[in-house]
Image 1 (tube, rainbow, N blue to C red):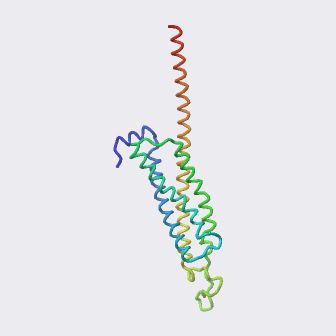
Image 2: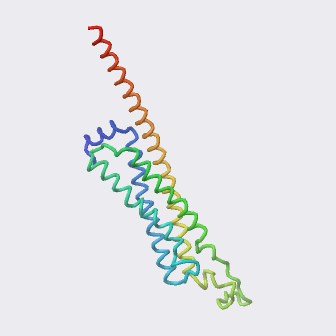
Image 3: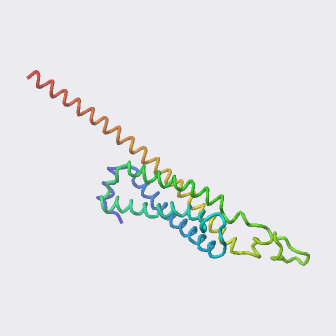
Length: 210
């Protein structure tokens, strides 16, 4: 549980701190689920099939990378916020860079994993006259009755893609928050420097008349 001092300081520094922290917690959850799904799909794909278009199941591997990044980055950011800095967030430029990197990596990862998903090979079985699906028939090769592992892998890929889509939306939202925070920080700094210049001018004027 967070102490009242940390909550108070976090609220003073950023009125959206609870929203952002919740998004990072949920993002960590989705990143973990996506990593589990794609890691399992890669394992079962490499164990049962040979990829003729690249080294192993590289399409799911590309989607795995940003999930691992988010799984490392989000908890570390929360630890840094609440444990190391006691409620004071990192500079928004850091969040702009990291959240941008995360959701930018998620885009090609999701697209490639979607395009190269093994679920595209799912086919409905063609039954013979006896009503049974003949697995020696070419069109029945990737049916659920003849190659059930294809459906197991495909379901894991679909689940991983769904989790990564939500992860993408979370980091896109956090990126927008960080951009707004960075803009406000720069505006405040500009206004502060102008006020400081005005004070210097007033002091100089008072000094010249004295």
